[in-house]
Image (cartoon, rainbow, N blue to C red):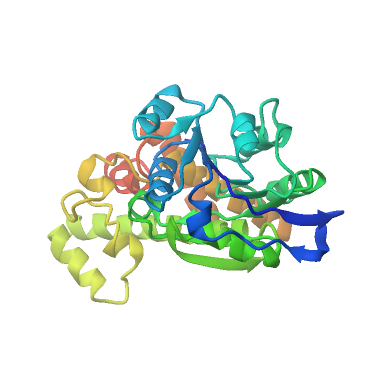
Length: 333
């Protein structure tokens, strides 16, 4: 589900023609001061809800918006103020974080009829934590700059569990002088906040990470499925893999075989977590980027096709680790 954080703060950054003004950057208010100003969060889905709650835990009053009223109601019950649109949130805050499912959603939230840029304040810091096309991030940055504000891309890794625990990894792209201001907010939701370079590089890092994650998850599912059919106990096989050179995050932390681990989607009929549709979308972004840069990604392309097939076969709303179930059930592959 789409997510946009809009974080209020009294600090304003002086700019002239998209560059930092000679007067320099106004001092960023301390977290104690910032906690007294509104923080906006738009999009309260599987990731956005726990991220916003972690901001609340750090003392930020949250001003929220989501396209789904039920998500707003749930968050309003926790004490947050709910607005009627992204534009209304932008009117209340000069630091904004967005967390959206796709490039079209991001374009609409920023540039749509009721988007952020309709009421954005000059000097605002806009941080997009969606996973979208790096080209779109750069286009949004240009549109934001024309309004006298600053845009940074900061996609996340770690999944719902890390979002709840506040242990996400943020990969940040944008003007380096703005990184400390962004980090102040992002450390409320993550344990790792890494500066990657100019706008779009955060997205590039995230796309590469998710392509590798998809490939390793498919590999883990195939290995576990083969071992089970060869007569191995799945828990024993997982233990051996995780003590050996085949160990990876998919086998050790997010094992796709039901009954091997607790607290992961495979233990809950593959509900929750990171949806197959979203993984297919991210792999599509990797494919586009590979085509644009003439980069061979044969395994990434195969993973993309696998997750697209899963979507077509009824697995779209299940966690991406359901590739194990897909391999078990689709004997005609």
